[in-house]
Amino acid sequence: MNPTLRPGERHEAVERLAQALSERGISISREAAACRVYGLELQAAVLDFQVKHGLTPDDVVGPATWRALEQVDDEPTERPVIRLEGLSRFAAAILRVAERELGVAEDPMGSNRGARVDQYVLGILGDGAYLFGEPWCGRFARWCVDSAAEQLGMASPVRDWGDLASAIKWIEAGKKRGMLSRLPTVGAIGCIVAGKHGHVVLVADVLGDGTLTTIEGNSSNRVRSRARKVAEFAGFVRAG
Image (cartoon, rainbow, N blue to C red; front, side, top):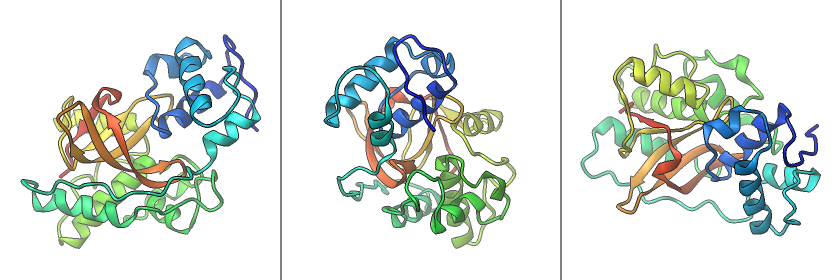
């Protein structure tokens, strides 16, 4: 059960709060997420979230705010504009795989489980079952990469990268292999670092105004597309 958080309190649930806000498209710095103090940056993010969702704007993260953070958005999942021009055959395949998964949702909502979600977590190599019930955005990204490779009859480039269950693991693996960049490219895996897991997305298009469109798992408990700021990301891993 999630506790009520008031400004200035220290609690381990602050990391879950930062994770939930990140998954709802609200950028949280790694410092604010990791210190376990419900400080000014998180208060501002919560206030913004409360105002936009018709909640009492009091900075207090109580039952109503937690429920809203865990609910699926009422808005439909839109199909993003995927820019395939100039992409390698493999990068284009990754995005097409991800696009076909739009709308897949957890069952029950907020459980990090579901028939299709469990397939992402298990992975096509069958090596992630122990992560059932954990955030699955990183596993979804890996599943898309592995599935694209399988469709093309090639070895997955991330086959020996480990579990890749979190943004930090993606960043560490990409950095180790010289495939991490601060600049986004279409088809790359974008990593937002916030709390223990952060958030992992697939870059569908990069716009010229400092924004990009994504396809991402575990975003409001489903696979959906979002518009995000490039500044939210700690790095981008080129897997295709």
